[in-house]
Length: 594
Ligand code: GLN
Image (cartoon, rainbow, N blue to C red; front, top):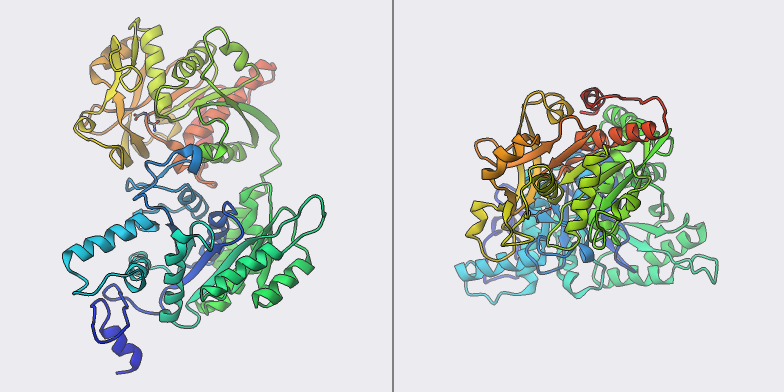
């Protein structure tokens, strides 16, 4: 047996007679899956996820099977309990995992549904090591950061490689090089490259070139020091991608090349761009995709014919950006109005729908905490449509209800998402069905008419982590409704959920008698999931989060519907001929996007 075979024969088990610890999933084939490992230096928030997803897309377009994984440094088991104000929105996967918003970037860019295997936190890693320790899996050894914790990281990556059958796994390490909490991930990547052998891993260091206004020139020292720090940890980057406000000068790239010990042609400029959807073109134009393919020696796995077809589809989409002929203004209410990241998926979904319809969408943020029935008309002046997004807690709720009342009574297009669906039920119950004091028990536990109440299965659960009704569910659509038209007359559609409260079924007959139509519900359960108002140009609410499943080339029908209705609203206001007259016709436009 060769040395490496002998080593592999011992894997998975712990031996006391040598220092090798190579946890490998059963059947793992070295060399089959390659790894692109993306780290960041100088500062966080460089857009590692955007960069990594765009590069992954370029490889996927060439017929390669790719899968991403985000490795977070924090100790939380998932992102469910994180405040979106500090960390950006919580993204929910189809399997119910609550994770970092970067997973949304990957899903959108790759048009792929991901799973919990694509997301790791330090908390998950430690939890699994400690579980193993309790089970006695480490056979009397002292459990250490190296090799046991780093071994767990490699195990997780290799399991993903096998399960996904990927040609290339894109590993994004959260935070910046030098953070104590991420150090074991970086050490695990060093070990991975050592164990997998040459040409199996490609290290990409994303860094930032400063351009202080007082100097008026690009400075690369901080970036150099960042790369040096990575090298001190035993990792020689293969590629440096320089983030910067403006295109990075040849001189700055030369410096990075010399001090980073990397050929000049592998130092790239990744400067700011108006739309993230133009970044794949930027990376492709500078040849980054082929540089990676050559380094990983996978030239024989790619198909240029597939790439031509996929690239044409992509360019058809990006060509429309910035060439929109019309524009609309959509208001979004919410308590995190100062942080755009809290609503990232909604902004993307609106952008997808707008590009699809050739209509530029301007977003107007509305803080509803001070809003009342008498000030709402002013606040919504010049707005063509309104979204009340998901949320928790009581702040600003009455102002949101005032906005919905205004939208319902003024034929203003409305889309309610999760809490926005619940708020629409409350508004309708109070103002149309005469149910005084109607509310959600989340807002007022002792209200006279709790039309929104906690789900029966949630009543027995204590604690806040990972226990909502989470993930993808099928939604049954009612025939001959607007929702049914929007979804191209499908009987059932898959949507993503994250909620604890729902419409109390005992109020459904009263609400329906008042004219509210529940056009989508859970199969075999009285959980209402979509509502609409016949006769209104566009008044749709959903208990789900359609923004999470909108993709650039497949915009979500509920957002396409909203933007189309907003466009009609604007035409009516300006007495222009309307491009689409009825909601019934909307499905014709969404069909082409499916
Ligand atoms: N707070 C509401 C619930 O738990 C709505 C949740 C949301 O908007 N994501 O049901």
